[in-house]
Image 1: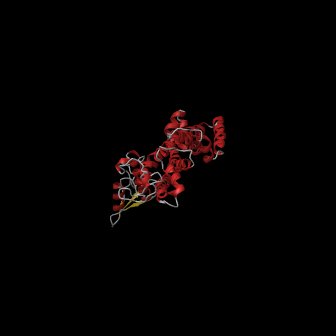
Image 2: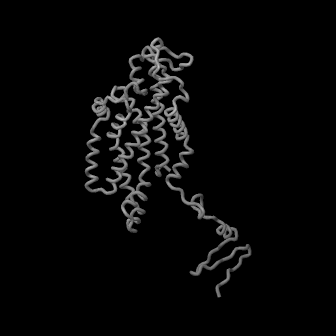
Image 3: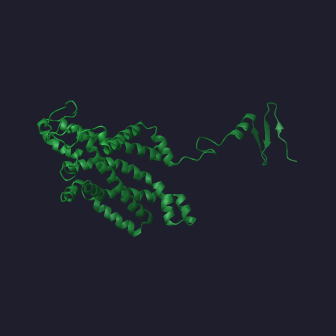
Length: 328
C-alpha cells in the first residue's frame, strides 16, 4: 500500500516524493497551486502569447510622440484629399493689386508675389507633397523589399549582381541626379518626380531587406520548417517575410518625410513639380526673391513643410522604438 502523508499539528502534510525525499506543502500553498490559471498575462492556458506586432501596437498606443505625430499626419492626409474643408478659395485665383500684401480679413496668411492667397495655396500644397511622399515610399518599399528579400534568401550570383548594382546607385548624388534626369522632363504631373525617387531610392530599402531576410532565415523555426519539407515559397512567405518586415517599415516611415523634403528641394531648384501645380516647394522658390519685403510668403509654406517632415520622422522614431526588441 502507498504510504500515507504524515500529518503535522499545524495542518501541513509531508508527501513522499517516491525518490526517498519528502515535499512539505502547506494547505494555502497547495490550494494556490491548484487555482493558479497559468502565470502572468499572455502566458496562461487561456491566453495566447502576444506577437511582436501586438506588443508594438500596445506600446505605440501609450507613446505620446506616436499619438501627436499620428494626429498631425491624419490631418495632413485629410486636407490633402479634401482641401476645401478648410480652404474655400481657389489657389490659382490671383489679384496683382494685392501682391505681397500681409494678413487681411479672410486672408490670414496674406498674398504672394502674384496676388494669390498664401493660406489657400499652403492648404492645397499639401496634396502634391503628400502624394509624392506616399507613392514614392510605396514604390521604393515594394521594389527594394522584393529585390533585396530575394537576394538575401537565395544568395549566390543573384545576391552578388544586386549588390554591385546597388553600389552603382549609391554612388549617384540624389540632387545631381534629379537635376540631370528631371531637367529633360516637361510634364507637370507628379509621376516623373515619383519615378525618379523610386529609381534612386530602392537600393537603400534593398540593403535593409536583404540583411533582415538573411538574419531571419538563420533562426531555428526556419530551419525546422526546412527540415519538415517546407517549400521555399512557404518559408519565404509564411516564416521569413513577417519576421523581416520590421526594419523595412521603420526605414520606410522615416524615408517618407525625406521624400517630401526632396520634392520641395527639387521644386525649389526648378526641376521638380512645375506650375500650375500647387506645391510647397514651388511657393518657397517663388517667395525666396521677396523674403526681405514679404517674409510671410516664405514663412507659411516652409513652416508647413517643416511640420510635415518632422511629423513623419517622429512617427518613424516611435515605430522603431516599438518594433526593436532590444529597447524593451
